[in-house]
Length: 221
Image (cartoon, rainbow, N blue to C red; front, side, top):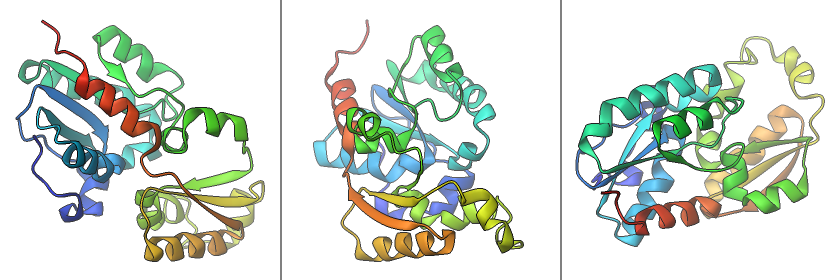
């Protein structure tokens, strides 16, 4: 079981380096670094001592064309040490390539287009059809500059804001926790982007249900 406490993790390390597994447990959860805190909280809350966690660098989300190869390499690396590997990524901009790779490798992955959808709940997210909404999670709220503002060059060229966000109407903060400080940061991000602000408390959403199913499933022979 992964022993790191969620609050002890560094956002910078999760963004740039990911998280190494402890090498303990029957099931390895191979995840995006942006989900590390939520996954570790669920492991501890439910006492899933047979589950271990490894994370790829969260910044891969800014380069979705690299995600599939990175996941494939990590599965090959860790497969000898675990009875099952489950991939805690949604499609995440890979255009179905990640799902195809997981199918070929015989590993399960989280359903849905991206983490916003499974935090919100896939059915609810699809029903809203919010094509003019920009989403933040707890992690992306904390790492807004690293994932959004600086990669788009807005720290150097703020006049580009309208070009990037002119077609959006609101920023929706999908909150995993009740944290007034994060809510204030998310609202400040919306102001910087020139968007209306909406906070939606989701908790862990469908992520909790998917991990519970994996935790309870019998290990393959």
